[in-house]
Length: 301
Ligand SMILES: [Fe+2]
Ligand SMILES: [Fe+2]
Picture 1 (tube, rainbow, N blue to C red):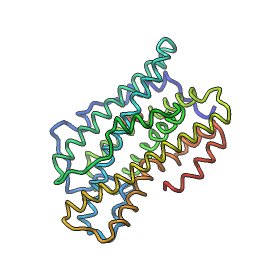
Picture 2: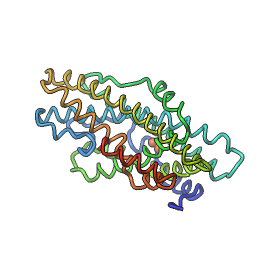
Picture 3: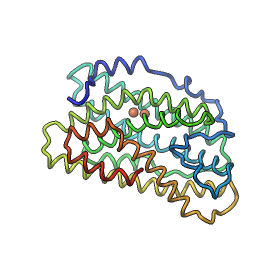
């Protein structure tokens, strides 16, 4: 076995690591808009030398708005996926049932927390930033795929949040402490989710032939392509918001959109694709699956 995860131990760690919304952000707390919100490793705004430092900071904050909305969207399809997965096993292993239901409860709490941050963002930011959606339509499109493909996308997302927090602590100390705390608290619980999702993927892959796994990887790429189109659209919306705030049209708008789209590809897809733990799960499913995803990963770097 390539891991030693089990439901009982993971549930125990989850219950010990739990926090409440108010530990991270109370409903009337304000974000500090004099600071950047996202680590540079994700926002990649400091590299845009046609923007002055103030404009770079505004774009960093718009990128953080995107982070709140994208995680809102993805957690909204993770929740029904977990409930669907738990339902056939309700009379089985008690640790498994409790661990998966607790996982679902935590994701519902994360949705709530991302919404609370979103409300604080809207209160403090001068313009409205459009967001792709609605999240129900995005979720429905993803969930119509093979559960193994969806499970792999979710596993990739769970591991990527580990990388995001590590990126944020490696960054200089100047990002908004509330955002840093959001990433840390999310990371604490996602670390346990990633283990449970590994067990879910193992269960969904059990007994499948190489050909059936290959088919699931095709669908994994379909979902990835669909998410990527959304990220491209979002990069356009983000640029509209930036131009509105700074009150000028950017002459190199297309270049900035493409650079920011690439930053989002890394944040929401690539950073999970190259995670060692995600790669180990793929290897255990099939070396060919691992190889196909490794070949695609540089497009999302
Ligand atoms: Fe989450
Ligand atoms: Fe999660």
